[in-house]
Image (cartoon, rainbow, N blue to C red; front, side, top):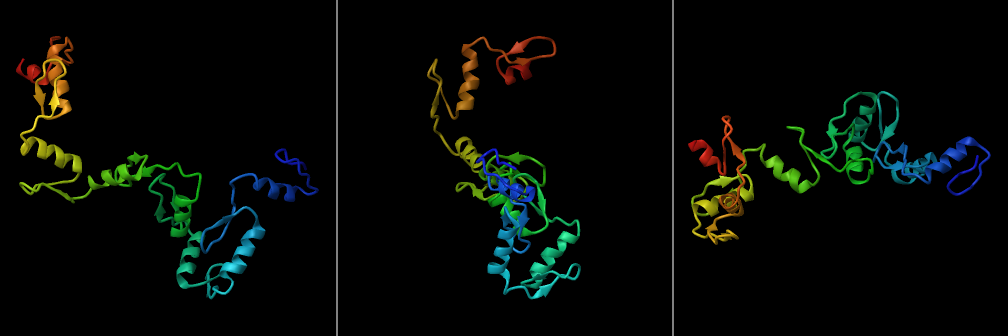
Length: 217
């Protein structure tokens, strides 16, 4: 058997398969105590000998395998059941132990790096966006207005509140007539009066430049 990547040859198929793994990210031999994966069984045995040999005091009631403490035994005994209580917030994949979840989230290249909200199934590309979204599922309103003490879930909502309720500033200016507004959304809405754009349509077929004009119609 000849490796097509490095041209190394092997007399036995088993040795050839073990060698092929060295060119991949596959780590099928996983330590059941700390969930670290290895490309070869030999490396797993060596890991067990040096990292866990003096720690194996507790025994699994199902298969007799030994572990360092009762917590490790209980975690191991999940492999004899279908219980997978640990879910990845990025891709939703579930695991039987917290160690395997940690290894998946921090070391695995198979995770899609998506943060999954377990309450509404929305997914987010970054933890920052995920964290902001999770606030919407809680009653917490950490952003307090220092003027009237009203609380908001998101900082952007507090800024908008301060702008409309407590500010006399009009920082945004119409590029055509120079009229000033409190934010860019109001400017864009106003600038429609300088164009022929009429995006608000009535069922009768007539169209209007603003939603207010449509309602008045």
